[in-house]
Length: 222
Picture 1 (cartoon, helix red, strand yellow):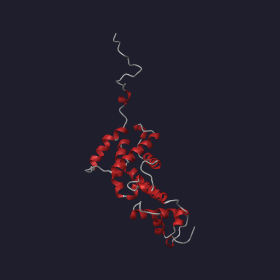
Picture 2: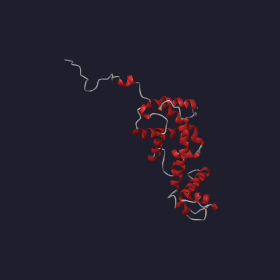
Picture 3: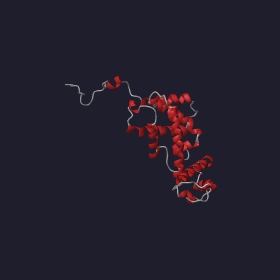
Picture 4: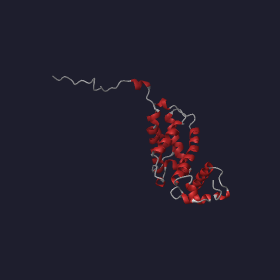
């Protein structure tokens, strides 16, 4: 480990060096925004050369991704705690989205998870495969029984993509005039929640009122 730079406090390990680079990048993002944060800014923040930063990360987008991931982990912990006591998956998703809509605008680093506004900075968005996979992992932590709603393990990626698309739209393009919290919750409950609730057993068992092609008969008109 090099013993120069780092503000006179060189890191004791590569792991510490990487974390200090991530922390410095987060500070730069807070000051300048993700689009205007460069690898040179990060190096200057740490008192090291660009080459020192390159020893630990290949490009600025990798560091920004790590900033987003670390911020998201803390956020998800708070989200899961908020959802304790949710009655079913439908309620959990609606309340989870409401929590995100309240929280993300007040914590700029969280917007990196969805790539809001600054998506050009490193070319990924809320529907990129890695973002969707992260969303699915987040859903698995929800304190609900997904199977009870008919949502299988293979369905969670698709559900995560729908949720991230909706969140991105609601955050970047709010209604005009803006909806209040009660109105927005009612909107999500009306149009999103039904997809996450099983119909009553009697409805699931009831036969179709329309004849199947095999049983339909053409009337004899002769």
